[in-house]
Image 1 (cartoon, one colour):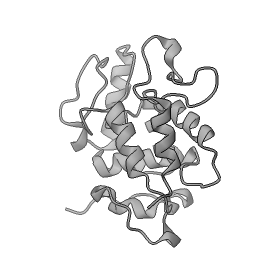
Image 2 (cartoon, one colour):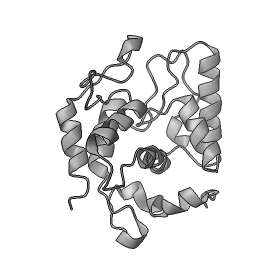
Image 3 (spheres, helix red, strand yellow):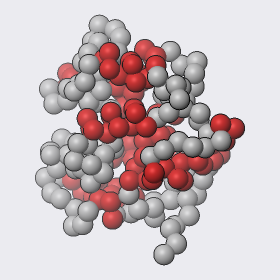
Amino acid sequence: MAQPKRALSCFAKILCFVAAIGSQTATADPATSFAANDVEFLNLMGNLEGPSGFGSISHFAPALPTRPLTEMTLAEVLDYQRDIRAMGTISSAVGRYQFIYLTMRDLVETHDISDALVFDPEVQTYLARFLMYQCGFYERSTPVSQLGNCLASVWAALPLVSGPLKGESAYSEDGINKAFVAPEIVIEVLRSRFEW
């Protein structure tokens, strides 16, 4: 069965090589790709955020969806997140990369991503790469400390890598979130992202 087409914005066209990310390997022509190895970071962050895999749902969720997340469309996932928010959940995070409702909604709306896409591993990784791109992950000129702290502001399980709260989650003050890895490990992964 044919997959629904993505409605790609100019920004999304930059990311066109991710159509083949199901293999989790980067073999794209440098002229049309990011030319950065992001798999190590995706695995590190994904294992911290959603250790149960692409079907992970926040343990704060007061109800589960009627079928696996990876079989639902983005529209259905957003509906589910809206429902549990209405129930008063502390977190609406879903998937391996623990997308909260507001982040998912903004990604879909801002970048004209079709909400008919299935929330499968490929699409989840595609969405994560948007967030990484926004932090400057794919730019050699981005200072590692700036990049690390930006990524920590996206994913609560990552530590701030510099500043007075170094080593802590950017959201540690909420009493719920905490970092699950040392900042030195994150820094090493980020520094090595252009080494092939």
